[in-house]
Image 1: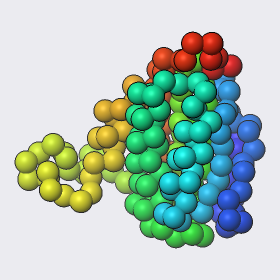
Image 2: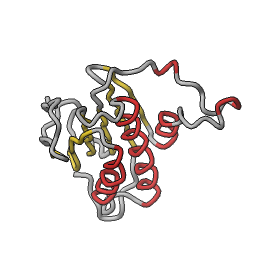
Image 3: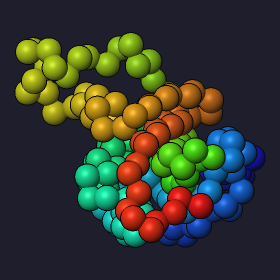
Image 4: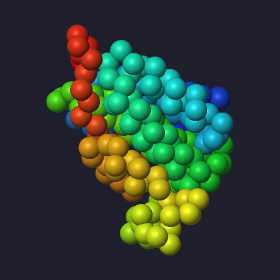
Length: 167
């Protein structure tokens, strides 16, 4: 299992590419970052840059927004923007060639059943509560795990560019 330390990375610390949480992955991006909202755009841009030679533009746009929401939730809601807490981000392909994204925070977790429906008329103007909804709309699978923080696992079955390979 990947070692995730609670020490502050300086300022961004690449993590090991070893990952036993997802079977058969090819990791194409893995970083551990402090919970600093100012790093959000840069990390998402790096992930999309890695993906540019592989996925089509529609996939890239969906992945960009879903990853952005997952990271924002981890940094802001999970870790309360506490730069002493970390967020672990992994992107890769599984045995079937599906893109997977794992975002794990160091927070105390939450109860997903208590998140208000963002499509309900009374919630349409709310400033929060859309992240999971957006992720579920853009990705083929979204799974939440709660064990020493929240782990969001997302899968998107991408249409690869001609000549591109996931492995």
